[in-house]
Length: 110
Image 1 (cartoon, rainbow, N blue to C red):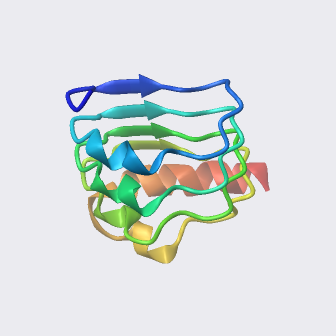
Image 2: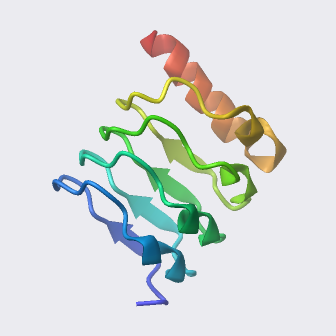
C-alpha cells in the first residue's frame, strides 16, 4: 500500500484518520469528504507528494501546524467544517493561489 497514489474514503462515518496515514508516501490525492473527522493527525504532514486534498463536510476545527510544508499541495477543500480560517502559517510559500482560493470561498460563505 505504500505505492498508493489515490485514496477516496468519502461518504462513510469515519471519525478519525489512522495515525499510519503518513506511511502512504506516494499519495497524491486524498478525498475524505462527508465523514465525521475532527482532526488531522501530525503524521499527516509526512505526505509530501500530496497535491489534492478534500475534507469538506467533516467536523474539523483546525488544521495541523506545519501543513504549509506540504509544498506539492495544489488543491484543498475544507468547506462545510467548523474551521473558520486556516492558520496564518499556511499562507506562506508556494500554495498562495490555493489558499487565496480557499479564503475567497470562505468569504462567500460568510
